[in-house]
Length: 351
Length: 289
Image (cartoon, rainbow over all chains, first blue to last red; front, side, top):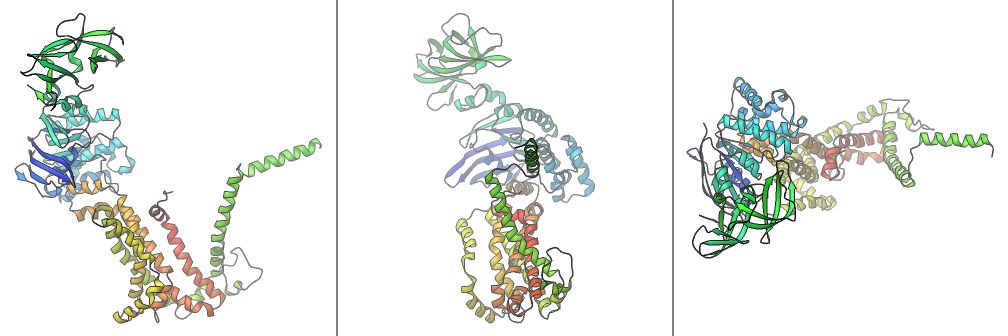
């Protein structure tokens, strides 16, 4: 039932603006892929091209084994959840969920159990006789998802479905969606600009920036081994730290420390390290950075330190009971396995 | 001053305070102007309705009865008894209904196109639609009459309806385009992903939501046609509409006949416009209330 999605070198040009620059994506059957990126990166355009709501300028698109280029949305065996829910205001919730099934000309006896089942999954059985005007945003969101699930599509497409909900509700729906979609085993593409949502939901994340897919990998790989500086900076809160270093004779020199260089060569490189991979050390050592604490923010589970290291911004998380105060000079020990190096010019990761 | 008169004054003030809201001079002025404007419009209509529903001789009575004590359908019955009135009335209804059908049938698709599609010359098209109202029909009258005689449309219900449609169409297009613009495109897209063709999505999703507004646009077209005099007078001879008929007969008919005629011209239009005011306001950019 679930089908894979195969996107090969798809381009999209709006007038003079190239929204997608040769994007390729290979989603396995039953896989949950998140398209993640800042606004304007082309993620929604890609989703809409897969749905058939937008026409690609060039490239190949397959759902399952069927090439779907040029097919209208109704012939692609997809279901889509829209950002603003798109619940039909003139129909009851029951009729909203049944809409797609009626278009398939199913019998009433088949429609009713499927609507009830989908409504049950989203816990909205008690709302079936109401109209969307009588529902809250969260309930409308549930209707939109139930309506998509009732279609039992090969592919489920979701366009920032949680972005209009308030923070608490979003958290709740996120966990619920994850359980539900894992159970339904439907191939899913989910668009979001929220990196936490992407990390929590995805089997694989496609990080998009400027019309390109920069990295397409599991959340943990994207988090630990970002393909370039953009990925490291976009994912994680607080984001990855970047420090400019000078590479000479196999060593990189930053803020008084000498670290083993990733590869041969001389010139500038960028060090990347996540705030939680840095420990404030008691004493100085050759591979410790020295920094000046400018701000201490107690966040509850831990404290977030903002430091100035060699005139560059640097963030470190410490234990909540850490005695470090702003104004202090500290030594920073970097977890050796967690150092990432990037080319200072292109921003690409060095291996 | 004695204590008693002081108390008297105090009492009077309290009474005034209770009866009248505490408004500033500006607010009083505003309220007064509103009242005058309302009376200016409503009073003649009231007298018109009153006279139309009074016995025939009450129109000439003096002093006039300003309250509806003596209601009768006598005048109305007389009005419809006059030769030509009833057929003119029917003609008016037919012309207005036809105008309604033509202007919505053409105007709604045009409005949808304006709301949903980007095409070359869209803004000039929108402007052109309004520009059609800039042509004084008086200038068009003679060539139009000649053409209609040639085409065999002169003195027919359909011919008048065509001209009325030309007058009503700009409004139908603009009302329906603002109507369709207010319906999120996402709803249509959702319908497409659920198995609808573009037309099915329009028919099953957009139309049901737009129907009340389209009905309002239709009624507006009806009213425009109902009240139109000039084209109807020029383009008809044996089969006039009610307005055309009244225009030619009014000057030589008795006063009560004029009141009844006035009633049938003014009141249906007023009632219809009142019923659809919400949609007209939204077309003119005034918030719904």
